[in-house]
Length: 438
Image (cartoon, rainbow, N blue to C red; front, side):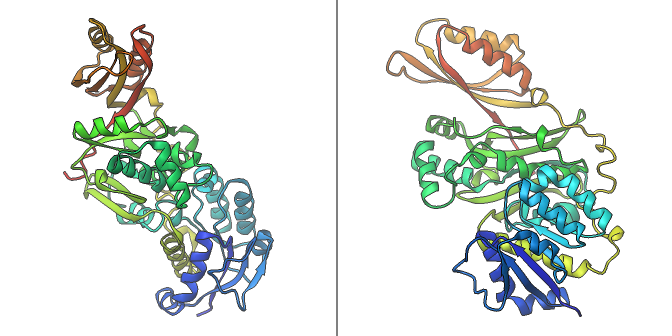
């Protein structure tokens, strides 16, 4: 059959891995696709010493690839928002299929891109945009297609998981482990997207849209990072039988959908609590199948390339198929015409349990006043730990609460922090059971 000709835009970590997997496994890939998949052209800023470009057309202009009439599929692995958006829309307008690993692009501009692709009758594939080499999008969109998805929760940023893992196992501070992660290449020089949860929110937005059949709504995702988590919090969580993980969580409720990224206490025996280092894992609860877990390398050159090339295989198989009969991008037909009846809930309406840590002056009545404030907000205490006074006669107090509404907890924390006997802000970490082993 006629070969599928590919143009790769970007030859960095993911682009280089994609190039090498395609060339190294060319025969195997051709047998799976039923036709050869050939690299026609590569757009790159600078050479990648890991890639042999002998005989391959190269350019510095990514838009040259998007307009090249000899190319069937454009692979976008640039990262970012604006240039990739223009590039992908240009490729679509020129009748090209697109494979992308860009979660930010899909989370923010996916609705527009999918509509343009539908009108042109081309494919946009994005398995590599979430959790690297873990085939979670295909599993959620196709393998779990019979299910009503109840919740999705995952460790979907390896940098944050690496930091929290080493804080717990080695008793180190956040800043120390972050510096090590940067030195090892796990974290960028500017780690904001990773440690403040923006990267995870991009990925969670995509997963939630596929899980529930709603438009992509990144702007409504609640995002909170791990930069305020201390070793004291990690240690106290451990003493109470929990592990702190930076989770993306989306739940279906009667009122709407939860869409949130934040540090979370989960019981030690849960599978997600035992995912360490830079690995990713996503737990999904379906009404028919029950709990399922997807684990593996969430980033890296060839793990992510594995997902990119898998998408290329799908495109090669479907390239002659009427696009009306393809699997919808976000799993459900008609997305964009309505919200599926499931609005995204504001964070203040979320119901969960909480871990609180505060420093109080060591004098009678302080703890009683804290308990009264919580009681006035209908928040009950499940566990309490009062440690010995520190220098300056400040007593660390650790509280675990039963479930309550975020709005109530916000008001309680505001009142507690206004007390004269409380030093500094109250640390608040949400607690989830996430019983994926039911």
